[in-house]
Amino acid sequence: MRIVYCDESGDDGYPDYSSPIFVLTTIYLHYLNWKDTYQAISSFRKELKVKYGLPVKTEMHVKPFLLDKNPYRSFNFSQQVRKEIIADYCKFINTLNLKIINVAIIKANIVQSDYDVLDKALTYSIQRVENDLNLSVNPEERFMMITDQGRVGKMTKTARKIQQINYIPSQFSSGSYRQEIKSMIEDPLPKDSKESYLIQCCDLVSYLAYLYVLKNKNLGDFPNRLKSYLSIEEVEYYLSSLSSVLNLNASRADKFGIVMYPK
Picture 1 (tube, rainbow, N blue to C red):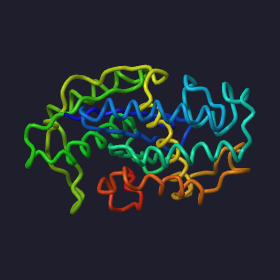
Picture 2 (cartoon, rainbow, N blue to C red):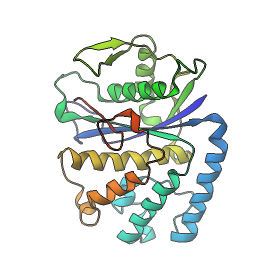
Picture 3 (cartoon, rainbow, N blue to C red):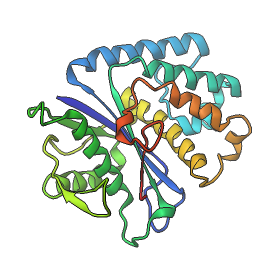
Picture 4 (tube, rainbow, N blue to C red):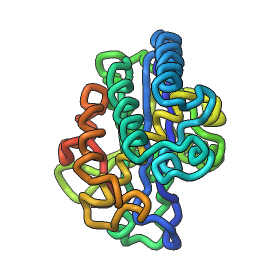
C-alpha cells in the first residue's frame, strides 16, 4: 500500500481568483518506507538547525520563507542563505524513496464557466498515482491520501466521485474514455501541515512548480520581494535537483513531468 500526501500553491478559485495557476503536488511512498522516511527528514531538519539556525519545529512553508515574512523574518536569514536552504531541501528530498507528481491548472486556458479547479487537479493527480501503481501487474495495490485540513471536504467529494464514475481525456483525440479509480481506500484524511514533514515537502515542491509554470507559460512575474534575488534558472535548478523522485511519466510534454491543464 502507498501513502499519498498532497498540498497546493495558488488559490483554487474560478472564475474569481487571485492567482493565475493552481498547483497540486502529491508525494507518495510505500507504507513500509514511511518510518525510515520520517526519521530521515527529522535528522535533516536537525542538520538545518545546526547549519543555519532554522528551528526543527518551525514549519517549512516555502512562499513566506522565500518572501522573508513571519515567522521567518526573526531568523535574519540573508537572501543567499534562504536559497541555500531550499537547494539543500531539494537535494535531500531527492535521496528519499518516494515519488512526486505535480498538476498545474492554468486558468487562462479555461473555457467552462463552471470549471472546478480543485476537482480537476485532484482527479488528474489521483489518476496518475493509480497509473503508476500499474494495477494490471499488481492488482492488489492500494493507496490512501493525507492532506492539509483546509480542503478535505471538497477533496472527499471528488475522491468519492471518481471511484464511481471517471472520464479521462484521450491522448489521441478530443474525446475521453471512462475509467473509475480502483485502488484508493478511505476518504482523504486531514492532518495539520505543522505536524507533517511530508506535507511540508509537498508545499516546497508545489511552490517551485508554481513559479516554474508561471514563467514558463508567461503568466506573470515572481512576487516583487522574490524577483529581486531569485531567477527562473535557479527555480529550474531546484526542480532538476529532484530528478530522481519526480514522476516524469506523469506528463511527457514537460521536462519536469508537470501535468498542465486545460490544454
